Image 1 (spheres, rainbow, N blue to C red):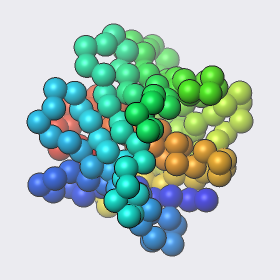
Image 2: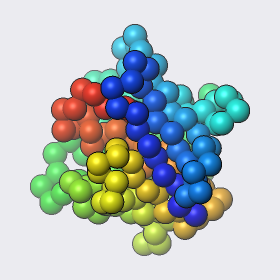
Image 3: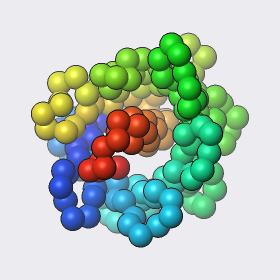
Length: 167
């Protein structure tokens, strides 16, 4: 299944929409302002909160927590210093460990578990419209994989020093 994540640039309240490949809106990512830590709400099309994404402050590794129903469902972290490219690690609540790797400079990367690709994220064809595609190969983890793609995109934009990031 392919999902499209569309950013709204220069909006008063920053948000991004996650749609199916058929343009059906499934989720919205809202940024909460006036907080010490960067926090986003991942909300479905009916307004129900699916997850909260929180960037931890003052850590050596860039770390983001994904909470569902008040419990940490996943922790994504990036090494502060990496010589041979960027690499993210994800620890899930069920004990699985995922790896996110690829050409992160061009926003082309895969989410993998034990060498199996669960999702491929690509911004290659969408740079003008501030959108990117998430091809999910693991339907049972689809929502979590889309949330992880949003987190990695936020980390990459934050690293580039973009202050007008939508996530």
